[in-house]
Length: 423
Ligand SMILES: Nc1nc2c(ncn2[C@@H]2O[C@H](COP(=O)(O)OP(=O)(O)OP(=O)(O)O)[C@@H](O)[C@H]2O)c(=O)[nH]1
Ligand SMILES: [Mg+2]
Image (cartoon, rainbow, N blue to C red; front, side):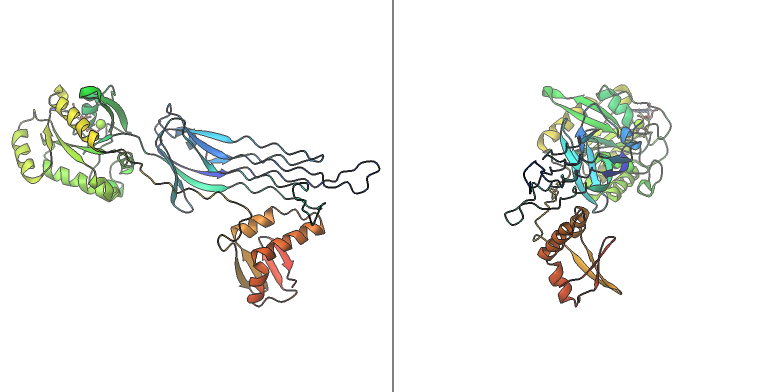
């Protein structure tokens, strides 16, 4: 089954908790810190496998969860990292973060991989947290939460040329003649239900990949016929091969057919209209085809190649013309992927790390960084709580609260915890 769009929820593993422990040795009273760091949580990684050509496997894997890293232990033992989860995807897989609507990965080459949701780092144990001023801290960090992402995964086939046109104009017949691909061919509409790829060999040892797409009809962008969802597969192609039935066997006018399809292409994505295009005038064996071709050429000022796909006439020229065109058009990446900022925990000065909202009965502090800090704090001891308070102060939360009029004793909320404001 061909599946080219799925959505999924990813939960990368949390980091393991750091350990708070103390060295206890005979005859030594204050033994010092002895707790190890937690291991990192599992990241969720997508990796291209050229043996795949559908997202079918992911259709049944809507929720992907990574394991938590192991907790740190006493005697300075670090917890083990959780093994990353590697998901195999076909070449041409595009991942969009549904929260930001940004494309975060476009995976095309075999073996290429990308971390889609990063596992949390392990919390530090009290050995790692010791400082000159606090040689034996009685606190440890909790593990960093793993990234949570809702994503859309699309397959945009890697083809150089896309065959488009109304149903039954002969697209599948053409690919069957010029490549080893043998799709179903029949006289009824929508014979082709999913795209077919074929490797074409042209003159001078050149080769390229052609995609035969399901037929389009007027209103495809509104869901008519099979809809326009398959057009995502020509977004990457460098050339459009527009197939028109010159026999007008179904009583249609070839020029109107051409205009109809162009409109659907543009409605799906305007950029497709800017791609270099050739027009393949098929079914030239049909009565009236010559006259139709003449009238068509008067209206369309683009290269038109008359062929008879069914008897393999005129296709060699088309094959070589496409190779010539591809020679002059560079392969360009479909998306520019911005480097996703991997979260660095203690760089609070970068951006406003929090927002404070005045509520009826106090103040609420929100923001990724404060919330993460809270999640990573284990309120096991007073010292842990004090450390948390110090960190908030360092981030500027106290100053901001004062500025907003907070007074001693006011309630401050972060996530589901409440604190009292102390100046
Ligand atoms: N007379 C004639 N018929 C042709 C020619 N090329 C294809 N056909 C016929 O046209 C019909 C449709 O051909 P297909 O290749 O299945 O058309 P398609 O464009 O792939 O159609 P869909 O998959 O439904 O979009 C078949 O009956 C073919 O035999 C040709 O050059 N001349
Ligand atoms: Mg077909």
